[in-house]
Image (cartoon, rainbow, N blue to C red; front, side):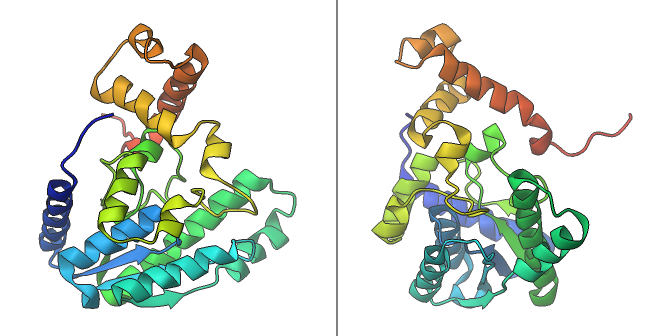
Length: 254
C-alpha cells in the first residue's frame, strides 16, 4: 500500500477546503454526521480549516438506524464543539413508500434514504449559506459504493483521494475515538447493514487491489502474484466499470 506523509496530507486537505470556500465567497461548511469514521474525519478536517464556529453538523437518523450512529455523531460534535442539527428523515421517507411503493426492496429504500439526506443537507446549505462537504473516500467512490445524487452529492470531496485505510490512519491523528475507528463501516441504510458484507470484500483487500490497479497500473498477473485471486480482481474491475456513470457529469450530445 502507498505510504503517505499523513501530516502533510492533512495540511494539503486544509488548503484545499479553504480554496473551495474562497472560490464561492462562503465561510461555512455543512457536514452530514453519520457517526462513522469518514464523516468524523471530514468534520475534524473542516474545523481545522475554518474553525468550529463555521462548521455545522447534521445528523439524519432513520427509524431503522443503529442507535450507536446518533450517539457517536453527537460525541464527535461535542469533541469538535460544533453546532449541529438532528433531523429525523423517517416521516419523509416512509410517506413516499407507504403511498407509492409499499413493495419496494432494500435497494430502493436505501437509495431513497441517502437522497433524502442529501435533500436535507442542501436545504440547510441554503439556510446557512454553507457548502456541503463530501464524506466519500476513494475506495467507495472508485467502486461506486455510494448513491448517485445521494451520499455522493457535495460541493467538494474532502477525502475522495484517500483510501479507507488511509482515512483510518488520519482519524487517529485527529483524535477520533477508537470506538468509531474500530466499528464496522456502514451506510446505516437498513438494520444490520455493513459495507464489507454488502460489497463482498474487505476494505483492506479492496484498497490493495485498487491501489495496484489504478495507481500502479499493474497487470492482473502481477496483482495475483501478491496473493489476490482472479475472482477478487475481476470483482473489483467489474465494480469500477459498472459504476463509471457515478463518477462523471451526465453526458450530453456534442
